[in-house]
Amino acid sequence: MKHLKFFGTIVAVALLSAGVSVFCYSQLEKRQQNVVIEKNSPVHFTSNIGSVPIDFTEAAELSVNAVVHVMTKYEPKEAEMVQDPFFQFFFGDRSRIQKPQPQVGSGSGVILTSDGYIVTNNHVVDGSDNISVILNDKRTFTAKLIGTDPTTDIALLKVDATDLPTLSIGNSDELKIGEWVLAVGNPFNLTSTVTAGIVSAKARSINILNSDMKIESFIQTDAAVNPGNSGGALVNTRGELVGINTAIASQTGSYSGYSFAIPVSIMAKVVADLKQYGTVQRALLGISINDITADFAKEKNIEILEGVYVADVNDKSAASDAGIEKGDVITHVNEVKVKSVSELQEQIGRYRPGDKVSIIANRDGKNKKFEVTLKNKMGTTNVLKSGGMEALGAKLVPLNDRQKNDYGVSGGLYVEKIEKGGRFQQAGVPKGYILVKANSKIVNSVSDLEEIVNEAKQKNSKFDEQALFLSGFNPDGKIVYYAIDLKE
Image (cartoon, rainbow, N blue to C red):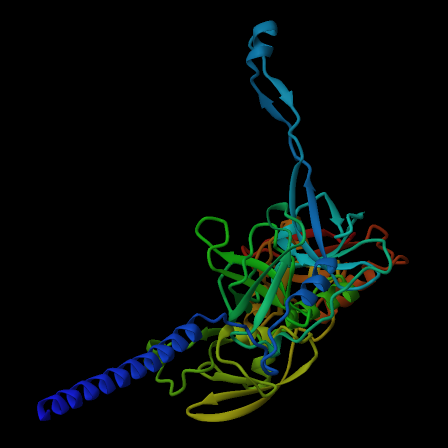
């Protein structure tokens, strides 16, 4: 009997142990299942205002109506001589003239005002003979080119229309790395296409612009952009315009990961200048600058890495007048920190000649503050008009004492640089030319020449043909005369 009781006790303990084991295992399994469910649950992108998912639909709807399809036509310049086997069979071995067919191109643009001002890229319309704009509602307009700025790759168009849909201008300075943005445009002629991505970098320079005074401070995103997107809108999740899509990083010509947009901080100033003056009012410090790397800092014995190194300062420039010197490291413009060449260019690019900016530069380990009055590329603080001094396409500086001595003159201007496509280049004026007189008047300063140019362009001028007649010395010392056509 005792044996049976002992056996029963053993069985009861065994059953109890089994029950506890099953219960514990079931609880553990439930926990493991909960963990798995949690890992596989859907992920929601949330905004910075709480747990509300980001909704792109409103921003997309606002954007597609304000983004247009820009179509360009390029007329051939020369006829082509071709050999046609069929023609040769009947008429012998004779060439015939074949007129080349017009070429077409396409891109995108953004409506800025309800009365028809549209911004796009310069490279979208550069050299075109005819520009058409197609709205999202399929209306088509012929566009007039108001002006272009190759240094920022911006162009401004105008169509004759009213009550057009527009985009609100946002603040590209407030964009944050990781913030969601939409790219809207017409890639591969697929109209009203919207893609999404995040801001992956700011103030990016990718060295794609060819201009001597280029400004590259792009917003880098991973929103898909392809040929045809150029000139289209980069918008934030509120549907505000923050950039103009311009370029892609690609080895194939198609999107492969990163795209680049001109920030509206640059675009807005360029557009305002083109509307008001017909040309961009570029303000200059008059310095040569370098980015600072660890190796460069060691070589130059610079203590700070964040800033822009002043490699040289031009004589009589805005920086020279303010006291900035070679070897200074610029760290702030109007209290805005600048850590690279592209950031400094972006900040200065917001101002016009004659504007005053506060510059902080580090010199020998100490910060110094400079008040700088910015100048234009002619070396003055005047606003330049389209077809006026800027159209001459030359940098002129007053003669120094040695030059006056060498040429036996009391004053004049030295042609320090000739720009491609300018009036001076077209007339054959060489670099190094010594300009003594213009329209029979002695020229001692750039301001003197500017007054003469403005006078020659007046309708009641005695120079009815609106021309500028120059007299002076070529670099070899020979007296030479040039005629500059000032007609627009």
